[in-house]
Image (cartoon, rainbow, N blue to C red):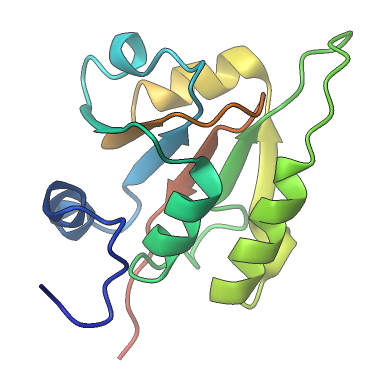
Length: 146
């Protein structure tokens, strides 16, 4: 056991977060995301039974967002014509603001297939059981300033 580490962060996930360096990226994927096929060149970690918001909050307690890029957080843009609401994005904004003073200014949206292409380059994909649509989020790691 460790102090001040959110218990949702497994030893395996902590190891991966620690291995990641500046500018490495990870995706926290919803339950519909093709994590295994997109993650053929990445590490895929299963976090079944958990949603994206709880993992995002826990990860951001130990994971600095990149300050050398304007938008270190990416969401998958809703496909034009798709009548889907994304209230989970407001939850993400609140969680990010809790951990990074830039808040929602850190977020950009990527077109669906552009998001997939960027996902193929990430260090890690965390597969969740999140049921919300368009709940995938990509984070770019920054440095810890001392």
